[in-house]
Length: 271
Image (cartoon, rainbow, N blue to C red; front, side):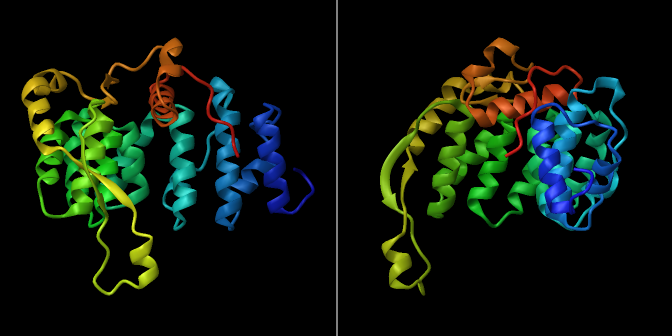
């Protein structure tokens, strides 16, 4: 950590952090956080995340502002993740600003960490996305019930990719399986033979079932602010119930709890 070149030193920092042996006040760690190589700096932020989350009030200040404005998406993501897991609640306003400016990394983290009041911002950003899967993934990650009507509407459209992604997002939020017809995802008219041969098979949603579920459960879903797989998460999840969630939802819940100063889990290990 102290003597090696940055790429080796940051690997040592990762190992030490995973074993809870990295000093949060290491001057070498400070240097690695500011390294011009974004790969090195990103790993350093992840090491600082694990180290600082166990240091409580003794954790030193970190240069979050510079890191979340970096050109590298990976570095920005590592810094927002560190902000969440080390309880930097003051990071939410700049996160919202970056998301409103169209930063895809900030949008991703706002979907994980945001409050119900962020629904209009995230939904506006989703509508502006040309990638159907990314649009629906963003709404599903946020889990706000106000997105369900749009998802059901997109299921009945002519865009096969959007209809499929909308059905998967609906299920991700509500926990209700609505798979219908099995189809092959269309490819571009000028696609080569290999692309046509490898086009994936997808499940199209059963729109009638989705509409029926909305009529039956919409009032129940609207009572919550964040849903995942039919489980209401806006009040958080007790530590003992975390294993009932899949890994993505589990880490998201734990990141929000850490940001709020009520950690329910140690941060994920660095790989």
